Length: 358
Image (tube, rainbow, N blue to C red):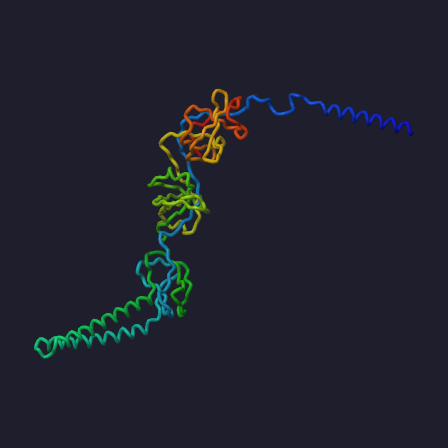
């Protein structure tokens, strides 16, 4: 039994020694990096002149052409409400009346005073013509009439403040007050919105600014509807947002059929067209550097660095404004490990698109 155990241990030891020496052997063809000067396999893109024809997708918001929260100018008790929720009202229409009894009383008193003062001034004028009165007395009477006129205008202005009228034609929303309630200048009565025309606000990345020219039409859709709508862009914000690096556009939408509502989100499709041809290369060929961007091109079988200036881009392609020419071979794979003058082995690539669309 003891001899059998020793024999088994000896066989196991021999097997371990054999495995150890087998693993120490190295296949020179599989170990270590390629030898210095060995060509690096890469794919290239042959630069051609292509036309940019694309669409930008953006999310926008529909807004009323005009909207305002209706509020009184002064504090007071509501004596009457002259609209119903959802009513279409006209500009200048009376919507709400506050208690104005004291102001009406003051106005009535002033009107009586003015009548008396005007009659007195008339008598003094007649006496002045007959030299029965002095010019000074007549002038004083005229001043009293003018002062009363000013008081009347002031009361009339205060009376106007007890009324809430529609500043423009539109649709009134849900009201927040009831007749008999006491309101202040900060009380919201209801919201008035002009909805026959809407505004569509949406943002575009700053890199597309050079391709935007007015007039410009956009198509958009809203949730819950399968049909598409059109809008005309009429204004572009003259500055770029520091936080989003986008520029805001505003379009006008006809809404006579009242199919759209303010506040709805819109999926906007903005056509980007460029009549002149441009040099476009795959986006993966671009390498960011400290002061700009660069690409590698294949020249006489070796890699060469070229600094480039870029413009418009989409998910697949990017426009090169300077640095490349038609016919250059831009390297698109293995670029992060490449160095200048490294020998290259070109891998055949699939056919290239001559026109960029999305």
